[in-house]
Amino acid sequence: MPLKDLVADLIRDKSLRRRFVDDPETVMDEYRLFKKERRVLRTMDKGKLKGSLPAEMHDDIDDFNVPPGEFPPASDDFLIEGGGADAQYPSPEPALFRYRINPAFAYGAGGVRGFSLSIVNGTASKAIEVTVFGQSLSDVNLKLIRTLGGAGDAQPTHFFQLGTFRNSIVRAVFSPPPGAPGGNWVLNDEYAVTVINLHRNAALAKTLTAAPVIKVLA
Image 1 (cartoon, rainbow, N blue to C red):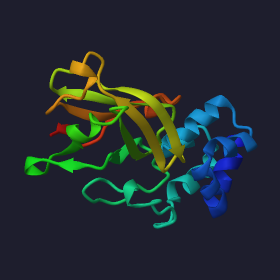
Image 2 (cartoon, rainbow, N blue to C red):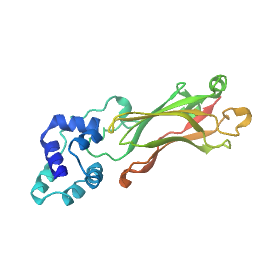
Image 3 (spheres, helix red, strand yellow):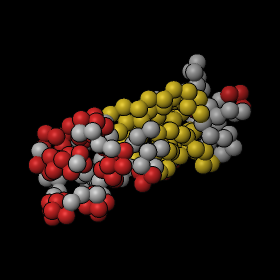
Image 4 (tube, rainbow, N blue to C red):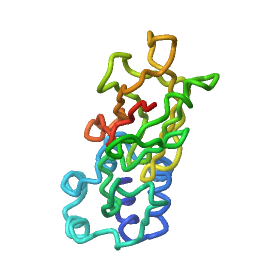
């Protein structure tokens, strides 16, 4: 039974756990898991795993926890914004930790952050780049959803997905919203950084919004 063999090996083999974290699809291919087994394993839900495995394995599954510190975050970008502990794998609930923009953040009254309209609208492309750091992001869309103002949602012109299943990086370049006056960004508009996770496993398919919003500053 491929799933039984893989789970047993993951419990006892630290190096295999590392490989699985970095590239779960390749490891599942090596063990020739069936589609149903892949769906169960991707949930990392002990109850669902036990339902698909022999009873003699249930105690081992219940007792197993990833040793603390085995999977440190790749960088501070993979820690929750404003502090907080890294979510130890395996518990791959999709999450957004932080985001960065290029040009670098500008700050307005009260510490609100965003980008400078005068800088971005003064460039030939009038574009900004947004990079999101998260976990368990697979087959995603990255969007800037307008939450304040009248110019509409910003549209991605280039999109990249990097990193690993656990330390996921999503990057996109955004132009001003269609129909924006003069094709420019509009002062004081605000946008929510939103990732739509289109994972094949319905339990991992979610819409996630980072905080705080991006504001168009002077």
